[in-house]
Image (tube, rainbow, N blue to C red; front, side):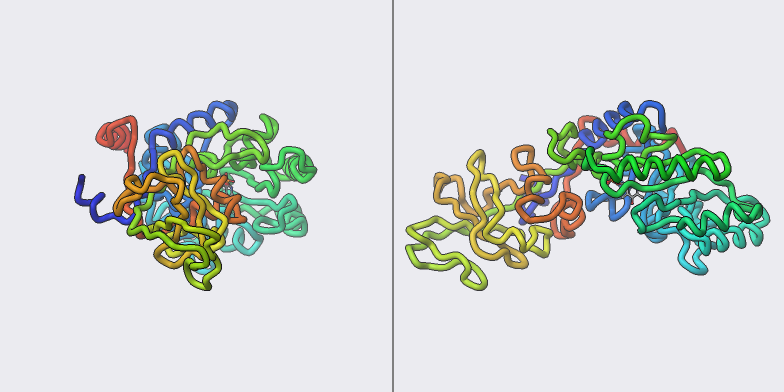
Length: 382
Ligand SMILES: *Cc1c(COP(=O)(O)O)cnc(C)c1O
């Protein structure tokens, strides 16, 4: 057993081969468009650098982060011809940082556009940007009134090279939702009156709404990481994440005895309880208390009592005791219990499960391709 594995209380395995297969599937579904990748929030908790490098090796050249800091951290690890777009755009006075680190802002308001125009004037050259327009989500992007200002002002984009006009879907995972068609129509209406440009509209789920949603660049995140893109339909994506945690100890409790903080679980009869080395500090959410499951081999075992910071308890009465020795692994996220299922148990969405995964896990990156080969392919592109 490798030292790392001996030391680990829990192991998070990220399958970069599955990630690459998911990228290829999404790219083929959006064949008329370029396929970018949302790698914000540390690639949804999976590690922005290894994830982005694996995608770059597949040919991805459009990467989306949310914060400026994320872009600065990622820039040195990607080929020079890969674009990194910062979804939040420049907050006041941050424009020079974008220029210095070769980051492309998504401009979300007339004020951000004005700041970038001014930065271009100071730099004495055109600067690239994406402009986002709001089509109904009321989160980021130019409002209808700001679009009006744009139409009235021929100098609105002076000095700005408009790479893409962009908008974002609010309900794309629900294919029947009327918001999808309404937002698509609003986006078309804006494109008809605004200067001609390439366009970007679809996230993961948007890709599955069909080609009329693809435009020139799609921006999947969740589906790359194995999250189901369509509500209520089978998941076509390959699972990327496996999370396993070790048994610390087991005990037998008798009828009437309690488990965990708050004594919320009381045994109705004799039970065997295993204490597991992961807790809410690791992103095994407290809302899984008394609701979640793990897999001990192929036996599905329930979480009992409240999840603690560093541990939680499983009722392993149905598992042969010799299989539940200290150091034995149980599976928390696996092909048999995908991240979407854990999210449903926790009363949240799979995005929150992945982005909550803590920093204490031993992380293993695996790939059908040897790592050296991936690195070589990437270096050739620099
Ligand atoms: C996060 C995000 C994406 C990716 O969305 P997924 O649902 O994870 O595919 C795309 N575009 C924008 C603007 C985002 O914020």
